[in-house]
Amino acid sequence: AAESLILAIESSCDETSVAIIEDGRNIRSNVVASQVKSHMRFGGVVPEVASRHHVEQITQVIDLALREANVSLADVDAVAVTEGPGLVGSLLVGITAAKTLAFAHNKPLIGVNHLAGHIYAGQFMAEMKFPLLALIASGGHTELVYMSDHLNFEVIGETQDDAVGEAYDKVGRILDLPYPAGKYMDQLAQEGEATYDIPRGMIHEENLNFSFSGMKSAVMNLVHNAKQRGDTIHKSNLAASFQEAAVEVLVKKTSDALKLYPDVQQFILAGGVAANSGLRQGLQAMLKADFPKLQLIIPDLKLCGDNAAMIGATAHQHYLRKDFASLALNARPGLML
Ligand code: KG4
Ligand code: ZN
Image (cartoon, rainbow, N blue to C red; front, side, top):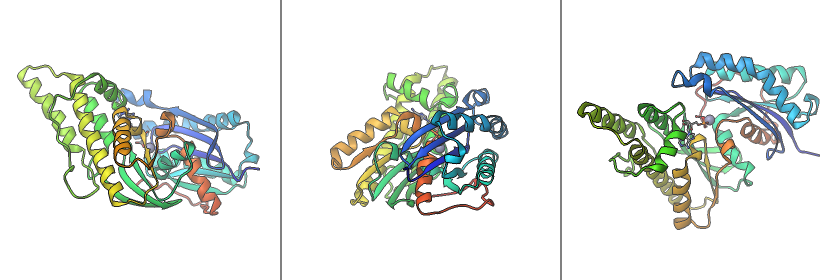
């Protein structure tokens, strides 16, 4: 028999997702209902719109996840949900649904940190080996995390301003790309050459922190000045230049972190920006050259973005520790690792 069968819910931002996860590593189902189309015309996530969509979708997504996994609520050992960080209205929809299921079916409730979830997406590729280093690169966060054991997180570096995905989205918006622009920027970057000069924020500072707002401003200024002069901007070259700068900084700080923590066994690249082709290649090349013994884990593309499977993977560890939440569980929009 399985150690655990967990129904997990994720609704921290603009995806409504429910998964059924066995033993933290086996995905029985992982349904993701994206709201991207609704937010596209606003060029970003509108919190009120997001929570309304979650309310409309959540029941159907729960039913679908159970049906796809061929599981009934009676079979489930626990109900897990993202408690933060995220948009308060969005989080509350998932939390309310989770509490209702847990109460009605008399199941333990588990609160999960969304950022832990991004790291635990790695569990679907290979079992975690400690100590490990993770780089979370998403729309809301950019941090280097050292883990000495399960659920034991030490943030050793983080962005001082914009998250890398946020900077990608803002730069993409300046270049008239659809929201969220990260993926389109990545495509353009692959067609272009890095001919523009973009600063590498904080690259020479002796710490593991990041800064992406200077790179974003540099692009804004280049576009603004070109417009004033009546010059045309070479979009793919500008995208390639931004990508080269962002990747160089992320790779350099990761390399610095690995030198500071030589006991690290495994490196996990997590979060939506883990889908970035330049970042994947850059990290792969650096690790192969400088840390050949280290195991690199990059989750499948569909597990890099927000999803409930990663919440279920994390919840399994809480389940093993009987680390359960009460029905007073509340949204924690600013929750940190
Ligand atoms: O982890 P995620 O789905 O949501 C958050 O928790 O933030 O990350 C979404 C972010 C967005 O900023 C999106 O533009 C970015 O990930 N992203 C990318 C790529 N694919 C998604 N950024 C750069 N290159 C990509 N290929
Ligand atoms: Zn996320």
